Length: 337
Length: 238
Image 1 (cartoon, one colour):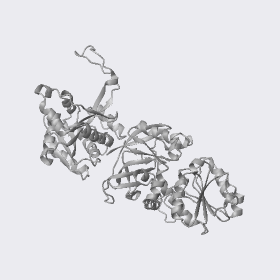
Image 2: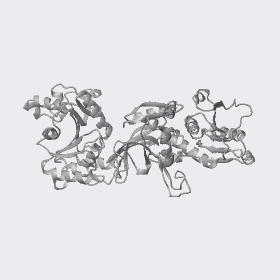
Image 3: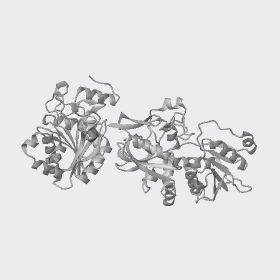
Image 4: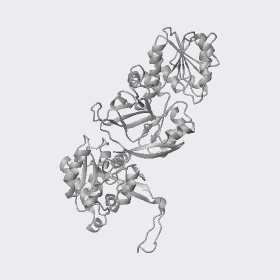
């Protein structure tokens, strides 16, 4: 079949490429709802290094999507079944290493075409079925799975005194991560530290949400998650090192284009563990889908999801990306192209 | 019920093909053009069945191609065509009624076999509009200036381009409406029909426009065929 693949060819310019699909061993999925990530915006706005853009474009963006199965010759899924798609392409099989870190691993929308395609062909283990979840919420499953993955790694690494777990950041990632932590660690107090009062007001489900400049006297946390990225990474990591108790674990999740200076003197003095956590794998998707069956979590996630008008043409893709620039949280849109 | 109809009745008189093979059977990518088109049609799970109208000499060949190239749980039936495009279309309509009976809600989505770059979006919008309006044409705004000449030598007029569109397919209809309008046409009117939408236009029935795309090309000449191969990034076969 001739597939239409809608690629970013240079910053802010999309075009269509035709690729023949051979779906003999693949599940064919029609994307229904897609969600925009900061990583997509960095490509769209040309904020990646020029050498990176030259190497990776043209490329279809978007790695957060749900869809419906069109066909599956392997018999794993039924026609019409609702699924979420996993953008991680496993590399070398290594039982010691999570699939998203294995050497040779790839990622759709980072060097390989993402989900802005008429149809997506995936191996059966790159698809997870779901039911009972609003499609607009299911579209952000990949985002949830990243939080699930980080919380899983945290559970493996961090010592067991977890009275206070702090999340630095007040954006979508911090919101989703805090939602996952509240569910997974009900015995811990989840505290959020941010800088935008209106965003912080949304975190009604955590123990406390503080402005970074108004932390209570004597504030301390046992462990912390950094969810800022960009220019904010330095300040967040610096604050975390200041407020975390000895031998705490620091989960680093924010992406920064530039090198970030770290106060290693205090990292050493406190004996901290710094853990990089990025992307996710199949197990995280399966767990995310399980968590999202909770209607309360779904309604919480809906608060940070804005639905843009459906995409039916190439200019519509640009329109969604431009609208998303002024949306502080997550943009989803129906894919009809 | 909703039916897809792929019209593949042509004999490829504008192409210099081997053994007079109709153009829809030429390879594009890893399968014949008509199979690429059909493959896209069967991704639409709103179809209850898909029919292919083909020249009587090529019915068996078409059926074998379907068996070889298409995996789908949507029933696919090959029907022998008639003397022209509309005769083929009405042969298929007769077969649909034989298989599924008459129903005032039957919708047909008709499409040229040699337009393999059709998208699921166009198919879905055709179905939606046909259910709402009864007749649908897929079009793109005209980009070239169209001139009208009565004698083929001098311009008689130049219509306002902003009101001109180029017709593509799919074209979709409420099946009963199309039958009724066709039955009302005189033999002279039937003789000048170039496509099914003209049946509606001649009788003043409203035809809703659905946006096509510049890439939804019709492969009618050797040049078109080369363009189609280049679009797919494959090796161009002379």
